[in-house]
Length: 157
Image 1 (cartoon, rainbow, N blue to C red):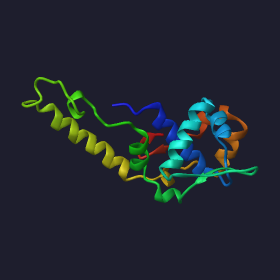
Image 2 (cartoon, rainbow, N blue to C red):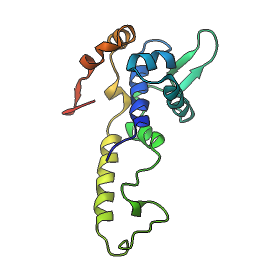
Image 3 (tube, rainbow, N blue to C red):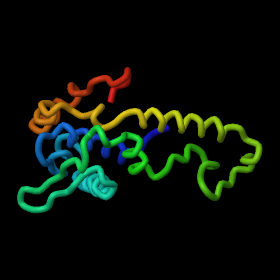
């Protein structure tokens, strides 16, 4: 199973915002991570509509977390960003699979999907937030990104 790049960027933008001690811009995040500004604009729009970010317009505008990082669940972010969790054809509507009525794979994969989302449900953005010092360093020099990753529960994020 693989999350979309869109979900990856959504998490990155929120991690950046959680460690930012001020408003931040889409341009700033795109530059820091070396990704397309247009793509990050779409990510910011979704995160704003989903209630994770708040957009402040005007001369000193920018983005800011809409609620504390500890109240932003990773499961909710991924569910907002991913189009679906249909691991195989039979999970979606209009399945044409000829063995759907007797296949046991769907149950196993459904259980695996639930374990995946349950694990995400145990973490919040606060668990992934970059320290403000690292966000400032990243904003100045995006090449430092690789040295910022810290393990979380035995997994690098």
